[in-house]
Image (cartoon, rainbow, N blue to C red; front, side, top):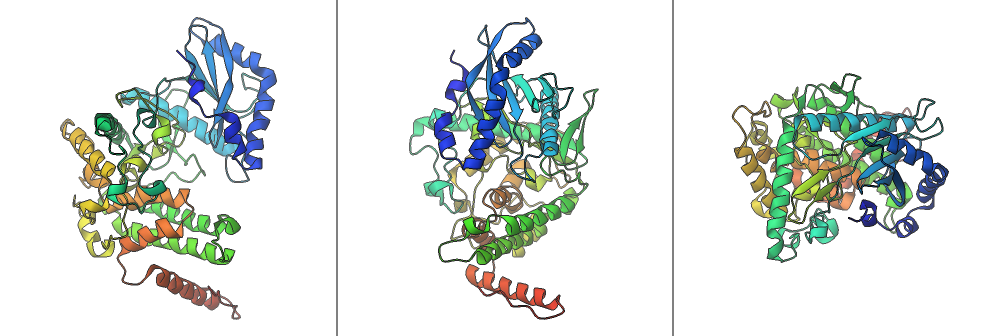
Length: 479
């Protein structure tokens, strides 16, 4: 069997399209580790049940936080070793954040292996921060050593699950988002894949805690909830508190995201920033009325946090054989849990005129109906929702449900789920994007005014508010 790393992306081609600073962050760590290959191999062999020798293969890959290598033993069994990379800046991938992410992944995998049948790697060893006690040496970075899982992605099976419409746009129509590309022979593969994601979603819903946050594990193997792995916030005891902090984070993201890069041609950096601040305000206005009071204090379910096709391995039938990268796992409100991965959820079309404000009472009372008609969600959304409802129907009586009694299928199909999980993903990944996420939120709010007109009204209100708080009049923002 070929090494797993043979299927990883081409290193040189990937580095060539990266910004110089980010590419140097990777290559500098490779240079740091290269002289110590024998030490890494000897350490892994010492932990093998039969002390077999192994090779650290040349081909590597990486994510935002880790440089990843494959260790191939003489019996052709592979392990994966992930080394924590240096910080990107003063805020992201700091030593403290990396330590939280490593401890969170170790705890999450322990929990999943103990209490579910979800296929995940086994942790062999880890060291969460550089220190003199690092078994590889005081100068080595933090690392995680784990078993490898062999498989392929759903795209390798010919199912373009990631193509949600034109270029991944959240404004695509149902007809343009068929991941089968018209090839009906692939439908059983897609159906099996969606059924397995639904099963994973249901299993994770049973793992509930009384707080919202990421996981920590003590020396006895007991898992509990601590601060979030990303920025160390929390833990939170209520959904309202969690979403309020999330809304504040989006406002800060709107203020901080690359001013010059985000501006359109002929548009000032100041106006681009104001647009993002406007979108952040729309998300808060849309989300808060959709929270169900009955679920506000939990218990709260476990979410993977970074579930997408690159982190899901399947066989040739679409059956899931491995779920990877649990360092973003944690407990979340049910509204944020509702969508396991954006690849199996719907989005809003330009023709959507539904009003959250006029129907939020129905959803907050546990209604299973969505504000949106069936035609506003893409094909894969409906297919997944059917599988989720089917898996739920097979659950034993007395299985854990939200205090509100809402089913997982109803949550997935709800506007609360779209704003709390699906659109929240786009808020962060697209940095409060005006033309996609913003217009989706504006349509959801069901206001009569034009989007651009609403933006100008927001700026006018902002000028008034900022002027009134200063002792002397300031120059208003003109857009």
